[in-house]
Length: 296
Ligand SMILES: Cc1cc2nc3c(=O)[nH]c(=O)nc-3n(C[C@H](O)[C@H](O)[C@H](O)COP(=O)(O)OP(=O)(O)OC[C@H]3O[C@@H](n4cnc5c(N)ncnc54)[C@H](O)[C@@H]3O)c2cc1C
Image (cartoon, rainbow, N blue to C red):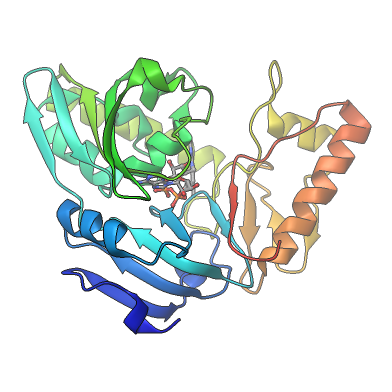
């Protein structure tokens, strides 16, 4: 891409950027350009002045995305600088680029309960809302009041939670909409009590999940009335691998890059698992992770 087609901004452009290597799967090629706006006005200016045919992809912490070996054409927007939280009586306004871990730590210091059940999820607020991130018994939609954002054509909008119709691992965010902030309900809670709950959740995860590995967490959604990991095990897929992509020994719904995997290895492994599970159990698994980029 020629840099002169891009509007002048206060934030940062990174051309021909090796984004895949920074994703949690650590696979995928370069993207034409990454734009990191300095603030919301900068994002708005970019969206209103960019070339009309410039493809846009929004990414958070890349903890739920498989990036194509061929990379991503057009511009990837990352909201790293939108990371502020304002506390009010009974609610917070948090910007979409804020990491859940930082947000939860800030809430804990303010003695407010909000999303601490999501403490082991390595994403941003924007990604958590897009995915309706959750654990059994709690999803971010349980505390979401409204979402504010800008569409790819530069129009600002605030959407109330009840208008979104969020479901399991689906925030139902409109197409071409960039979440820039969210209003979430808070409840007073003692700091030590929140910290004790976080510690318990972290210990549980360490026992059951391959923490510290190159993975995007659960690959497949749990179908109604069943657990994806149980179906994968029943179908005899818990020891499968393709190239450098393997099924985790600790949690067979997690796939891991052992070091030299390609995105295409993950795709092949996913397809083998889906077809064996369908054959052996009759369940049609659906991916939770999102495939992003060119030429799948
Ligand atoms: C070890 C591990 C454990 C995990 N455990 C869980 C778990 O228990 N529960 C769970 O729900 N998930 C879990 N995940 C998955 C993942 O962390 C969540 O889905 C997370 O919410 C994704 O956030 P992100 O910022 O990384 O989004 P990304 O992966 O960067 O993006 C995910 C999707 O959201 C879109 N998106 C991101 N930001 C925005 C924005 N601002 N506006 C519009 N769209 C946006 C992207 O386009 C993409 O389609 C786990 C992942 C890992 C690696």
